[in-house]
Image (cartoon, rainbow, N blue to C red):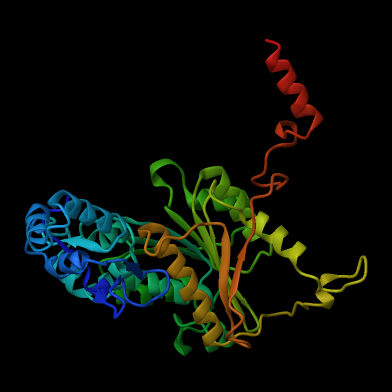
Length: 390
């Protein structure tokens, strides 16, 4: 039970002309509307200013509205807390320095706004970020913007991996590098930039090319030393997302990926055992599309691949910020995300928002049920028959 509940400032309510009470602002996905024919809910909302205990609030509202009991009022407070609209002014102070509280004083209110979990204090989310360890592979446009956002947001430890050196053609969309960095390893220049942004964040890195799933698993670590989230921002080797999917399924590691294809910018959110995996999503999207190709015709006829992706700082920045947002949400739960989907934006048609979600596939070679265990397989039926006879 909360000590002294109050409505989150960002969720402050108002009473409509029809007599209902609205909380959470008018933003879709956060706001709620509560029927309040006798007006006691509005009295409660106004009284929850952080200066009263739940029992005191119960007595105050019941004294003003005899049709409701103090017990019912306290239950309403509990319900509002569970819905994520309250915080506790009596909660313990966060275990953050005064410098950290000032640095993150603008970001924490947004986390509080997005959060729909029953937490006493919004600072819990910043403490979760401070404890988080993330592995980022690929320090190009997407990875550079993502790394900057994660460091600015206060992630505890960010480890960056990239094999390349800075080239002149990188500078139109890769924010970590300057003209004086030409020819330098990207990791070296990136660490200089990122460490200068937030000394409270541990930023490490290595110049390394990921050549297979075993190398990716080694980077990810194991046991208590494993990173909490993997961010795949690289587009090379072409198989790297498939490797990440298999490695993260094996280790139970949440991961996110992002990128751009011309004006289309997307990010994917993947958590083993929760929804479709990356390979399920890819197979579902292939089935959904009708490209009108002849049998055997190469898919590149409809979506040609070029030596490099056409990109500006805008498309790279959007993809990097989308993947950073997803990674932060996985750690904090603000906003809550149901994994197993891709989302994004089409800059050529802003009304064409991207949201791909498909069911988990039993026949998925990565996360599906093994052939011998499927109910429709002869091997599975035989196994069940053997077991039933024992």
